[in-house]
Amino acid sequence: MIGKLNHVAIAVPDLTVAAARYTAMGASVSATVDLPEHGVQVIFVELTNTHLELLAPLGENSPVAAFLERYPEGGMHHICLEVEDIHTAIEQAGAEGTRVLGNGQPRVGAHEKPVVFLHPKDMNGVLVELQQA
Amino acid sequence: MIGKLNHVAIAVPDLTVAAARYTAMGASVSATVDLPEHGVQVIFVELTNTHLELLAPLGENSPVAAFLERYPEGGMHHICLEVEDIHTAIEQAGAEGTRVLGNGQPRVGAHEKPVVFLHPKDMNGVLVELQQA
Image 1 (tube, rainbow over the protein chains, first blue to last red):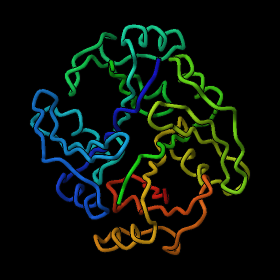
Image 2: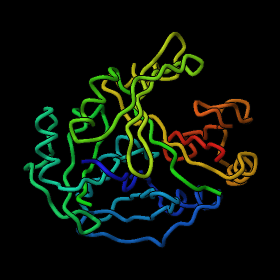
Image 3: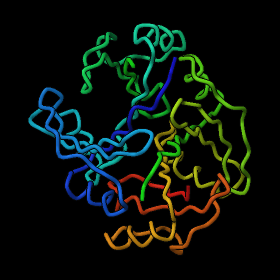
Image 4: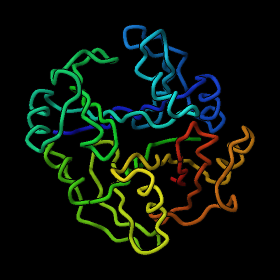
């Protein structure tokens, strides 16, 4: 069952510039975090109930690079919803005809928890990450 | 100062189909709510810390209609961040060069609170609604 919105991920061409927009409005932001195994650099924008993840490409084959080629100014990349049990969530999604990207099995995500991504064509154009809570 | 993420709005061509994707995964969704003064029909997907708003056009001149012409399957339309004081937030955004859409003044949003929208070109391609908490 879906619980929390863990984060909204926003792809940006320049993390520092992007973060400044949010700090100007009084938001707390993290230092830049490199996640080389996921091909991204991240700055977290802390909100009181969740956070935004500003993502920039890191290294080759970054999952964000193709997105920024298409949308050079950046854009909303995905939303991450927490689920109690990732395997149950995959079954429930499949029963509705919602496809899971990749081989359909969870992998360890950027937060060290099992995740899958649902096909955006089955989720109204929205890339939805499901993360085990 | 930015506080809560109030909601993530997702434009969809068919509210019932879209909502079924989330109910299949155990989410609670609202009945369909008509907001004719805002040109949208909405179904709320309840999460434990915030909610998603599935938006479909209602009537002529709906703000969602042009978006769906461009993205017929739907897509992430905007995020809504709560701020303590909308006028202070407008000043802070302006100091960073972030433009406010329309005449720059708050209007009453779908939640009966003062809102403004920030120019997506100044927010990395993301339409950001600021709503007074």
